[in-house]
Amino acid sequence: MSHGPLQTPMERAPIPDLGTEIIPKERYTSRAFAEREWEKLWSKVWLMAGRESDASEPGDYFSFEIGSESILVIRQADGSLAARYNVCMHRGNRLREPGRGHVELFSCLFHGWKYAIDGSLLEALDPECFPQGLPREQLDLRPVRCESWGGFVFICLDPEAAGLRDFLGIIPEHLDPYHFEEWKVNYDCTIEIDCNWKTSVDAFNEAYHLSATHAWTIAFSDDVNTLYDCYDKHTRMIFPEVQPSPRHSSGGKEVTQEMREMFLARVGIDLEKFEGGVPEARAAFSDAIRKMGPSLGCDFAEMNESQMCDDFHYTLFPNITFNTHSLFTWVFTHRPHPDDPNKMFFDFIELVRSPAQDVPRPEKEFYRTADDDHLDGKCAGGDLLDEDLYNLPRIQAGMRSAAFRGPHLGTQEIRIRHHHDTLMKYLEA
Picture 1 (cartoon, rainbow, N blue to C red):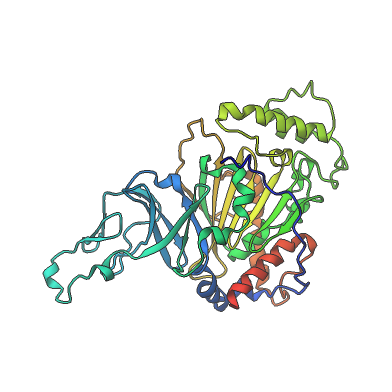
Picture 2: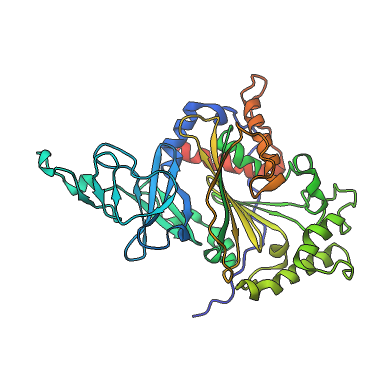
């Protein structure tokens, strides 16, 4: 039975009344609060661990680190994916270092205990030395719940939690038209940042910072007319691009030179022949990308003009940021540091939609803002991400000042307030 083309809902969500109180800064700086988050949040929710394509053949695996835990996601002999704690049940040794790889079996480097890719204990050295026996129900690698959506693998440490689809809520309906299962990883990095994980989530949850932090971008993106939607757990921001901000000297009504160079020319539009204003530029940009579909092996029929031009920006609670475009998507995950609430790990993958083209899987890169405040465009985010990462440690440092009580939020920061409201529902449950 055909259900017709998928469509991302465009209607506005009701604006929630979440009050105007200051967010207590201790949520960002307190070790006790971070411990509450581990107990009530991280050990209870579904967390994005990686891409299905990173474990495509039986025996392929990748690791996922969250707090004090390390999880192995392993492709099974029957083609399914399974997740296990990355810990030998003999003496607690980590079986594999963080990263991706392939095994026929897992062998502990400490005493040589061997495990099958399904987690079952295959061999313990000198089994006769264990008078208590080697009960498999205690010594097999411990399972972790593992489910997939859109080519993304999620894990959940809570065996009693509702399923992934229930947790995602509206997200599949909104993002399935993008068909993320066919996208490929074009860039992969992790950055250790001297800030709390929520400081990082907050920075990407509003367009209010654009005119100060990314002033050069207002020539082709519209911070003023950005739309904000809050749902059950998750939020959305429709951030107009191929459209200057009213704050720009053009007043937001003219096709700027930056638009012509950074958007129109890059999709093959002849600038000498192009005529028209902003609406015509957006239509031309959208049409040019649609014409690329056959060569890329994809169909953009399920996407409207806004999706072809704009950043459909979703935050999946608690820690995933989607900067969704027609040809590429930036996916950020914001992971807490296991010991220090003033540090976090920022994972950044760039996905490209080109199923018909060969896109080699890049190796992961690692950076630390403590070593290099400005990454100088080293990662795929270029100057844009560099500007954000410059701010984050300084925000965290200011949070610890006696003069600062906590974030004082406006209506353009409703997604931050919604994120905290959802967070506290978990912590107070």
